[in-house]
Each structure stands twice: as structure tokens, then as C-alpha cells.
Length: 243
Image (cartoon, rainbow, N blue to C red; front, top):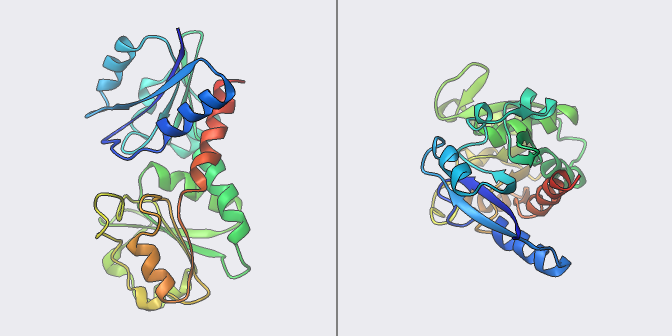
């Protein structure tokens, strides 16, 4: 029987992971299969465990990176401190949560950083934003999160001005705005504040260039999508599953 892996989230209509891992298994002659398991609600995780009892590993994507934690037996220290899990290892009946987003984001961001990138805005407050904040903190970059709703220590989109945008030359979108099929959506920023000193990073990878990135490019910013981050975090997950 092939080893079973997969990804949970919702709706999972455009996930990269099954094609990536199944291609990897075929190329390396590994007897394994990787499936997408869209869960309409996090409680369906228990149903999945009953239906697929021999899972070896799972990836976790939005909107479950935070709320999956109570369902796990263990969470490693970094993921617990962040409060977000995107990788689950199944071993001897124990489910342990990890976060490999930090590896994918860190390794794809570092080559783009310039001396002016000392202050950042993180758009969104979900599980992915926690990985981004963890990396930025370790890189010595201060940041503010931006949310639709007022939360402690965050800015709202309504509070942003071109002057504030100019103070934060690194802007990272962790929201699904702009993702297929909603390609006409984008974070409501005052884009006139973007300058050639800015770096705009979008965790969205489908489409290749979101409107967020297009607006940044129009103002001379360096832009980066999330495509490079995906295989980096996927390979980190594979190492965890096969340690």
C-alpha cells in the first residue's frame, strides 16, 4: 500500500502541492500518493483521520493553520510560539505540528533585501502572517500588521496614507486577495506612496502577477510572488516526514 500524504484547507481549488509531490514521488520511485483534502470546517479533520487512517504527513493551508493546533498531540517550539502550523508529521500514532513556511519565506526573501528594508508592513493577520512576522523579526526588520478590522498593535487599511507607505519599504501580502479566481481583488493601499525603494512580496502565486504586484511595479518597486517559496517549504516538509 502506498504511503499517504496530503493537504488540508478550504477550498483547495488551485493548490500546488498534489502535483508537486506526486511528480516528486514518480521521479524518485517512491511508493506514495499525495491528495487534496478540502475540509469545509476544521472539525472535519476528525472525519478525515477515520477515513484515511494511514497518513504519513499533511500540509495545512488557509484557513486552518491556527485552528488545527488543538487537534494535534504535539507542536514543535517554533510553531507553537508562532501559533501557526502548516505541516503535520504522523509517527507512532502521534501527530506533531511544524511550520515550514518560515523556511520558504526566509530563503526566498533574503536575496532581495536591501539596506533600506528595515521596516515592513504585513498585510493580513492569519497563520501565514505569523510565519512572515517570525522571519522578519529574526532578520532584524521591524513590522506592523495591517487588518481590515482594528486589532491591538495593528493598523487598518483606512489608517494608511502615502506617507505611512513610504515609511515601510517592505510590504508583504499574506491575504488571499488577488488569488485565482478573484484576480480583480487587491489590498486597498494608497499605492501612490510606493517608490523604487520598495519591495512588494505577495505570498499568492496564482496568478503569477497579482494586481498588488502590478501596482507596485508601476511605481518602480521590486516585486516577488510566492512561487519560489512553495518548493522551499515543501522540501522542508518532506525532510520532516522522512527524518
